[in-house]
Length: 162
Image 1 (tube, helix red, strand yellow):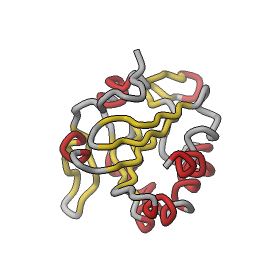
Image 2: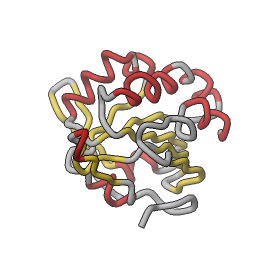
Image 3: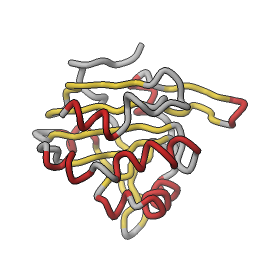
């Protein structure tokens, strides 16, 4: 069952690539008393994720932060090294987007947002979605109907909901 607006985000630990290597990030602690935008993608470097979804957030970062958002987070079922490299290549890191790895798909499954696309080699990946989270509670959630779409969950769409 998918999580929905009004629910609390799952308590989970994700990974980010730090100066010394992978670091644990307690998502529940990170969300306490803060306004976050979290968007999830099926895979770093994959077509729509790389060419549409990530760029839509990079280009809107100033306006999103101007709406009182404390942090913008990208989550993907990739390892933290891939997420770190993808953040550098796309300009996401420079723009201030936090790149978090859900390497074992625990957060994604707890959200009810997992899928498998065997023909594309995407196993236990995340559906494409974006949400606004205030003090750990989801106040807006936009899920795409298929992983090849990036309309409802784009940076432009989320900016309009802030």
